[in-house]
Length: 389
Image (cartoon, rainbow, N blue to C red; front, side, top):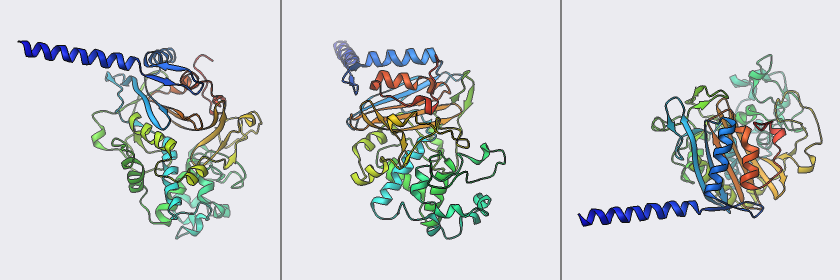
């Protein structure tokens, strides 16, 4: 009987030692304040309960390394499945930033020229592709470059189905202003696939997912995700399911986990797999943002309200000057999905949030303030209205 007792005692010592060690995990904010795991958990749980957020996964990054990661709440409220750090969640538009990073690896090796008009890559004029026949009477597409498309200067709406006509239209002179466009990102994908005969799915797998150990990430649904995936939830907690995408869309088909995307974000901070010049270009200002809100793109209203923080766009990422220096960010939004990545470049700190709740974005401002310090996040432009406003 002595051996089992010893084993039990050793196990208990290990468990309580680990638990105590975890409680002492500290994350230092950009302003120098130190947070324990207990304090982080208390903040997240309080905000989730107040805003009725079904599930949320959080990662914090310090100096290019993931220093804190945890999942809270439910992956499926009706099914009573808890969210875990390896639960597959819909990445939505976080896909765009990973796609931009992959393109910059092609730029690094000289395979792609950001400033070469896409018409010189495509074997046929763009309107001859079925999805873009609406542009047959508007030659302005001919000036588009990958730089314009990745920085949302194409003049296209976010998606054509938001317009009354449901047709694709160029709304303003390409290169003259910023207007977020998933349509533009899809044309960038077409340029690589039809113009350069590249397989975007294979490139994303090789240069992003495999390189950074993202074993549970994919541009299309995989059946091995089924035992542990998150369902989206509406503001009222209604189960919205999980769209199991069967086609690659650079604008937003990626499934991922908090563990996987945090590994990618940490690599971005380290500039792993990308030259410093390419990273600087990607995270450098390509276009100034003068709109009061990010959406709708069809009816921009100019303002100088965000001039003080230098709100702008790079290649695949939004940019602003935070209270702690240059910051870059990317959101991911769909019904039942609210994701946010925010990095303070000079301070070496990032916050990544994946939420399977339409209420998730209502706590992004408070999470950033509590976990990074008061960054000056442009929450109004992004329409991240706090739950208690």
